Length: 166
Image 1 (cartoon, helix red, strand yellow):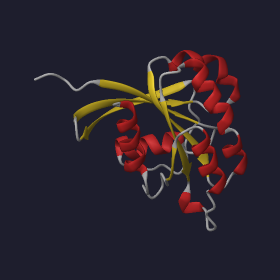
Image 2 (cartoon, rainbow, N blue to C red; image 1 turned 120 degrees about the vertical axis):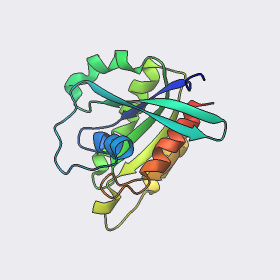
Image 3 (cartoon, helix red, strand yellow; image 1 turned 90 degrees about the vertical axis):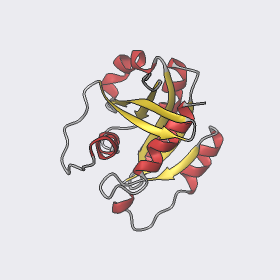
């Protein structure tokens, strides 16, 4: 029996938007309220079943701090799909997605995108109009998640798997 094909996906966005928490919630099934910032990059793998069969996702969690800009560029190679993550309660993190989109596209042109608004559990007045406009502009879908409650987390990674398996 052969092993499933391996596809690389990236989780990108500003520091503290919850990228690592999303990955851990999906891969390990738990949420930690306090986290140390990712240094450089971290990655995990998970087998996902799609209608066409199983694939293995290699999920790369990029450090959001500006000081890692130079280091990150080499880690994008081979990426098939990217989740651009922002904090629903921090408008600046949505504004910065254009920079993340450009950084990713400049380092790997053969991929698809997903715009992800995280921390839905902390927002009382959810307004995703601007995020949906940005997603439409770059030809991506927009989804809302909460790593803390796991809302939308499985959908996020299922969608990344589908995008990477084109």
